[in-house]
Image (tube, rainbow over all chains, first blue to last red; front, side, top):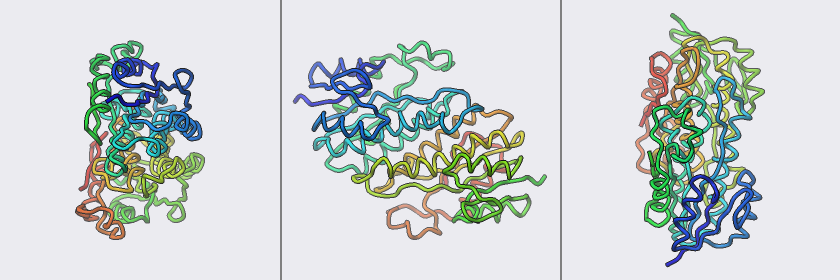
Amino acid sequence: MPMKIIVVGATGTIGKHITAALQKEHEVITAGSKSGDLQVDITSPESIERFYEQAGKFDALVSATGSAYFGPLNTMKDSDFRVGINSKLMGQVNLVLTGQHYVNHKGSFTLTSGILSEDPIVLGANLSAVNGAINSFVKSVAVEIDNGVRINAVSPGVFEESPDYFPYFAGHIPVKMDRVTQAYIKSVLGALTGQVIEVY
Amino acid sequence: MPMKIIVVGATGTIGKHITAALQKEHEVITAGSKSGDLQVDITSPESIERFYEQAGKFDALVSATGSAYFGPLNTMKDSDFRVGINSKLMGQVNLVLTGQHYVNHKGSFTLTSGILSEDPIVLGANLSAVNGAINSFVKSVAVEIDNGVRINAVSPGVFEESPDYFPYFAGHIPVKMDRVTQAYIKSVLGALTGQVIEVY
């Protein structure tokens, strides 16, 4: 049965693949900061609330969005670190905290973390922390969320379509977009919950 | 050789044991929000900066402090979640970001996370996320921090001296304070770095 699926970050590097794959058999509502069917500023809880009021009830939300600070530790400040806290972490957390009141029975949330929580690189302290928080958050939400709702995180390695990042990821094997896309599909259409689906 | 060791949260449930153990052979500077040799409000980057200016150069900092929101997911809001973000997470992150400029060559930082990052309970979503962030943060800082400085996190289960929490930790085996204390000693006096020292 076709589901109503919201993809936040639908025009991003991975979001466009997720959207294309899900649109074949489901109703996909695309969302982004500037583009898509609906606009949402994930750094603003108020914007997220308005976004869900517009989107209405849904079966699955995929978050493939959120930025973080990428830069040297020895000059890193509170305000730098807050970039990832306010965007990739609290943006995705608030999509769940608010979205739990809009998601249908047996619906799901799929968030995005990343390899740096486990396999760190220089300049990546903010992303590592944010990714680790997201992974533990989904484990915790899964044991408490009402109404049979599921939640997982996809934790990808560096994308094959993001060559600008390759120099920072020495020795990392870039992951194929199709494998990453399938991880989101597994979370949305499968039965897993509380899992970190690693793609690397 | 005796070291100069700062313990933040020195009068807390575990902090007092860490302080007692380290004081036998080292110079321990105790710190807390209201008590100790030095006062510091870890939710304020400015307070942390002043704290380090007063403390001066040091060999090891142990952080056994930081609070988080403990409450139901279905009413949790951005402002609730920010309690743990601003205190236990950013408080400890800022102790490292600022402290990296004060710590001696081959010094160390030891932070505190906790079992809920891996083994969640109802009401614990904020603590789970914060603990997961701290664990990944230390892994990342360890690969980048200058000057031979080490960093680890101690991740304890529920303390035997915190019986008020037992009802929330069904089936968890409370951990003995001596075992937890030894984990901090291992981090401070040993050679590990980038490790999450689990005590549960």
